[in-house]
Length: 291
Image: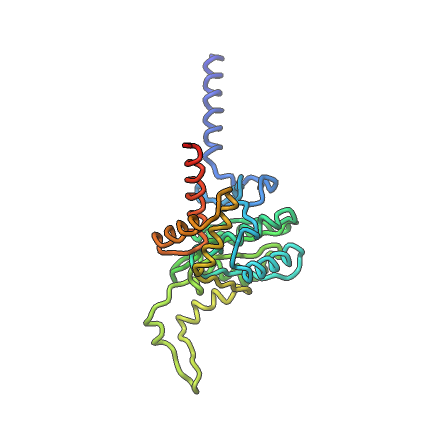
């Protein structure tokens, strides 16, 4: 009888262990020492912060031909980390021009001064009030990062973001800012028929209610940073930087190959330059090995 009871208890313990692994860790205290970057995850309907073990360590110096945007974001983040007034930031414009990388560079530079980053997917923006409550009172400074953000009018996260940017009756956490990137300046699709709502009053143009509603969200970001497509010289400058950074040789043959690479992809973005550099340097290394 004793042996049977011990076997049953052993199986119960094993079952409890398996159930604990399946339960969301949201009720457990956050291990803030586990990293400088976190992702907001959902499991079984509950949200929790999951540490990013190896954040992308890119430096401001690696980001070329966006000096104006780099300066503004760096200054704003420095103000925030120092406990001075700072703005939520919306980075918009051409794809592959360094919007997300700029935010990651800010974390890389200021993490030693207490900056932390929390990446939140668009679908989870409804949980922003929970995230604000979670970090309120912490000594660290937190950036909630929403990458490649855009909305449809019916998206539930739309109103949650508006509330988080303006604060609620309880106020916003003074140790938290929102940095968002988007290819759309107003974060929502714009349609031709909306222009029909525009009114002309006394020679002034008054946008319709639909347009005003869309603009009202982006206006809640205090700082707008716009990014534009790179020209050929800028693209080659970025490609050369990454090739030399990865240990490759920058010469006329490399630049010709970089232009062909961009032509095949129909884009001269920083992302395309980075992809070219990895391919080019990897091929150079393979050629040396074969010799």
